[in-house]
Image (cartoon, rainbow, N blue to C red; front, side, top):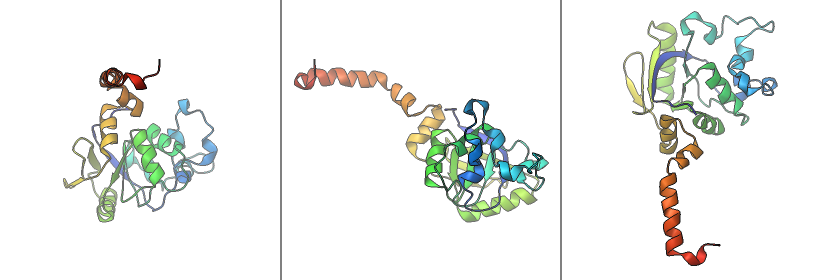
Length: 204
């Protein structure tokens, strides 16, 4: 997992609620080799015309949102099937954080496991931010995982919740196994002490 502490980047406002995982990456692309990257398939049927040309009405194709690393989306983002490839597509495209009023439960879990920050904010804040990003000249947002805050273009700051375990993992850039291995010395010391105190329960 890649480490993430904070990022100040262009935030792209994506319209719509209940954007499901099949819209994030259509099922027909899931057989592709992950090593080649899934970023090119992100929102494929929204980003591209049938002939493969970019759709000018899709926000990620607008010049002002080129290089966006943060998405601002509607409620229940990532609902639908449990495909982890939806998160792969976002991460491979270069998205570091998604701001939304709510997320699909499994998508939320998959995001954390892959270092994608799911930032839950109130619907009012998200709607105001989306409108400001479309209308305003300032389009950068700062997501600070260490402080658990989001700073918007108007310099207002909003705190967001995140599971402490996954916060620590993402800050360090480790998964569950890596984090456990980081405590190997303490684990081995416990095992030695346990065997010493309870020799009758230790098998030869």
